[in-house]
Length: 102
Image (cartoon, rainbow, N blue to C red; front, side, top):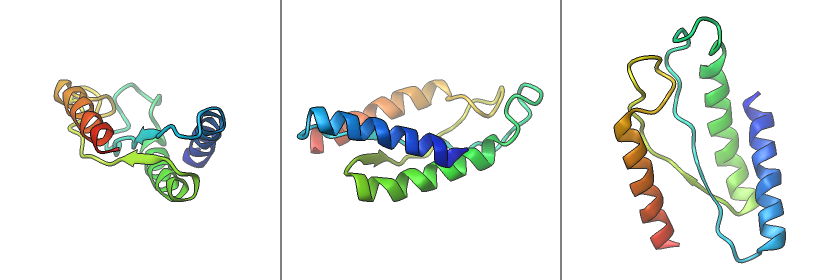
């Protein structure tokens, strides 16, 4: 579930913070999945899972001292799940800007 993935990520954040307390951790929020039929049944339930994961990460970031990167994505037209070529550049630029401000 999205909640269990979020909890696992928070465990990793806690481990990082324990070993390097001054480190800033950034987790990019996953995109909203709008299409679940790109590869048969492989992505069934992905829309709900991505929604749950985003909500839970935002909630947990406030309690666990990590940053979330919120941005819009233009998922590719092939399966509607993976990033487009432009998304990769946008993610890198947004991360760079956030890192500079931290």
